[in-house]
Length: 332
Ligand SMILES: Cc1cc2nc3c(=O)[nH]c(=O)nc-3n(C[C@H](O)[C@H](O)[C@H](O)COP(=O)(O)O)c2cc1C
Image 1 (cartoon, rainbow, N blue to C red):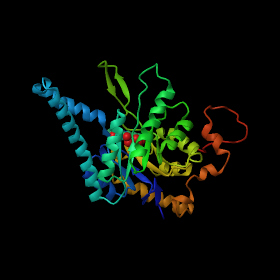
Image 2: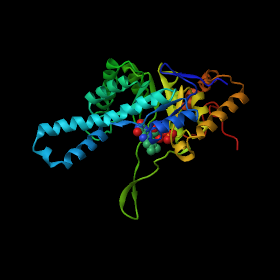
Image 3: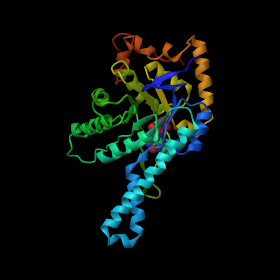
């Protein structure tokens, strides 16, 4: 079977990408993932915030610097560069050891650093760049359009400076996802990753403090990205990468049928280990053989060939009776 896929102009031997996480934070891990058969890898995100916190902690420890602002600024820049250098070494190390596309990932809060980090990552030899743009709407006075414009500004500014293909890892909280996706594409993104999955706060009712729960996704979470891949794949020119809740070959097949160019997986590998990648690939091959598909392109987006299905993607209410028999019930 031919599992080859082209994503943002990059040749992938199969559409399975390992998502940004601690699974992809070292050269050794990326090598194991590659050996298990992944099509590409997105490195753990480089967070501007983390670099700043680490720098502040180091600088704060040395009282001497408090009285010498210039020295403090120098140490800030130096320590910040060190965090950046580690990341650049990770990219270079991966590029030496593996032959699959290595996509870097960044999350910043200042436009300057979105641009600076991107330039450095391009120079280090990454094959692509994923922008993990996550602007939390903490200010109730900000209009949503103002926040959305930030997304476009970041993508445009980076697009003007680097030649690397850019993917934007989106969240699903926009009021009009179709419009935002289109505008991110117009701003210069070659791919959209639908969707990111964030830290989830919870409360421990015995100890009365805040905790985090459900760090890993469940398979039921696939429906959100499946819906939007299905809705957007016919509307956009850029590639769509499905992410969240893809826990095995059925999930991958569904996303490809809905029109995804590729998929990202993460939680399932925390649960089953990275060797599970090989199992998923063999199941994908077996399914294609059973269905008579020789390549991914034979069935990508197939579900959208039936015009009735666009209504199914948009349907949000569980009504008893619909006009026409749009949704086929599952037979148990
Ligand atoms: C432990 C852990 C660390 C993660 N770190 C990052 C990160 O650094 N950057 C990022 O964009 N996403 C990060 N993610 C999110 C994943 O890349 C992915 O989008 C999310 O887990 C949904 O995919 P899944 O359902 O296959 O797990 C992380 C997820 C986990 C579980």
